[in-house]
Length: 538
Image (cartoon, rainbow, N blue to C red; front, side, top):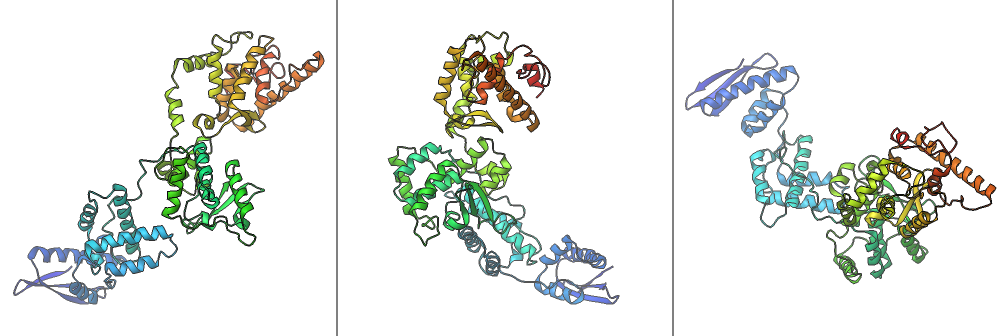
């Protein structure tokens, strides 16, 4: 127990038994009675903590608030950590020295945050003198009328990082910005840019380097300034494997994130091949331009105007976000898509999601009378083999709507057919697909449904993404068996009516394969297409 002793002139001293068993004495100086009593209580807690192995967080905070002279007196009697007096200017030097590997843009933002801290607190201000109330006042000072909220949250997030590092380095006991909310803010003006519009713009850009830079942002999701200048033909571009190995300096300090792999699709391949043909023999750089300047951005904006395309905000970030949104819209799992773009799934969702305008229009028309009628017809199933339907036009439109999302959203123009591994891109365009559907309706001689309009087939396509690999192989086995049976019948009859060019049309032709349409998989006649109750069990 500690003893509090009053001295003349409102002065106090405190006596206590130290950890070595000897009686210690510390003069507190002049203070109020309540302050002296509080000091005695805190000192007793500190002695208990030191006897148990070390000061608690509450005791460390109390010690940190003591005046330097009193702390020094107490430090002579007890094994407490030597106080480190670090100013804001010294913290700036130490912190930036520890962040040498950061990108230039990240360093610039941190330096700007330090500028605001120094402007408000002063370069000679001791870190321990800045408390939570000061941090709140600093944030209010940042929220000037002409400063955007996203900028304020960025600087507050940087201040949290800076002072958390100071706590970890034991320069201060606790961070005054611990309870301040900051960080990056999702953009409210991010626009999806269709690749067809980008192609129109690329045709107006004369510089091959600048043209490739825009293509890399839209067709591979590269960070416009940090990643393209580091690409090398010999190390990072694999034309044979159609892969692009992107060095990521921004995330290289994290394990496994120094390089990411991005596929080279046909859109990007043509631009890479053209630039490769133009390269000098001894130059291995993919992009000759380093960091883009205002002149480069003005050139892109002028090309947008000449192409007759609407100017989109966030010039290059929108291209990168469009690539990320395109991957996820095309069915690429979010984890894989985020690996290709170099972000976490959460960052992709919050900051790189742009909705195509055509998708919004398509969703708005989902409950039109024609589409509702087509859905009801598909779910009712086929009542008779020889009935095509009361509204062939509506059913044909329904068939075209199950084209891949890419065709609907302006992302791609190819249809989808059933291949060896599932629904795969078909070289046929949407127009050719519609023409084929019309021909099938007009040329059905046996009263069977057109393959592209068969409601049972529509159910299979709707349920296909949810099927396991085993069930997909079972469906493909039925399709192949049907193709063989129909072709054999055609050869025996000497006609070519049963020939088919795709597994989708063969699947539609399964309705002509004989009795037993309601049989389950594995039973009934070979090649019989399952009825609706079987589909619901898939």
